[in-house]
Amino acid sequence: MQKVLRGIFAPICTPFDEKGCIQSDHLAQNVIKYSKTGLSGFLVLGSNGENKSLSLHEKEQVLKIILTHKAPEQSVMTGSIFESTGETIEFALMAQELGTNFITLLPPSYFKDAMKDHVLLKYFTDVASSLNIPCLLYKAPQFSGGLDLSLNLIKDCINHPNIAGIKDSSSSGIEKILNISPENFAVLSGSANTFFTAMISGAWGGVLSAANYLPEAVVELYKFIETDNLQNAVKLNRQLVSGNLAISGTYGVAGVKYAMDQCGFFGGLPRLPLLPIPAEGKTRINEFLKSFF
Picture 1 (tube, rainbow, N blue to C red):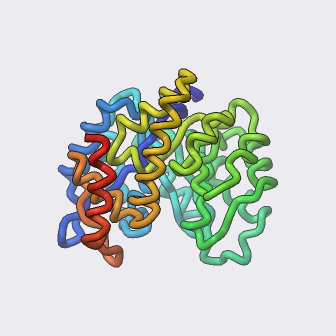
Picture 2 (tube, one colour):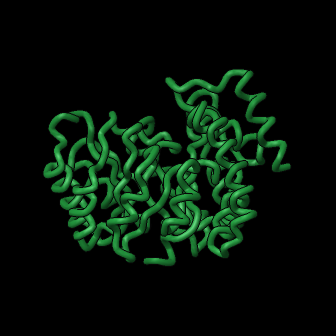
């Protein structure tokens, strides 16, 4: 468990063409290239994968492609993100059968006011108890209508034997989660902005959008930190955080996809209603990427 959840994971994007169709061959080629980069694995069907813009059939299609073309040692976390417990379990069971290693759970948020801690605890534990593979909590209030996971809720979830960790993509507070987490509970940073300090404080790794376009650089940063090469780690981290602010932080998925296109991967277009980035965004991203090539 500890080995497969340590390192850098790419929250992999879903490439679309001009008509909004999934480019399956491009996705497969991306995964094959990623399999040779040192990435520990992938988060499939997360925000960078445009989860909410995919049909059930498309989600299954994407997952199958990634599972088929990844390296044997790479792990796959699959987002099962729905508003009802039943739908979440149904999709998670399908992903489990296909061979995913972990299920990632974002809290339902349509009925946000009703999502008190005891309600979410039942949701997370009901799903986890239905599976034979471990679950990871997904703390990302920006993708769940502002709904956050409290420390008390996380503490209660840690006690469940099939909840193995958490991906924290919120803007702050990961150190507090690390303070309450036992050694066998995986805490993963979901943002380049918190990754360095989280690692120094005991995080297991990161699920970082920059790994979609600069996988080797992000893996190198992880290795610098793991080997206490902090001088080089600080320098590289400063570069990657600056790029993250210019790319994902400013233009979201569309920015990440454009950066992928410039770095030899297939990013493609975002699916409507998301729009491609404007010309000035392309110029800004190109300027940042020059420092890596």
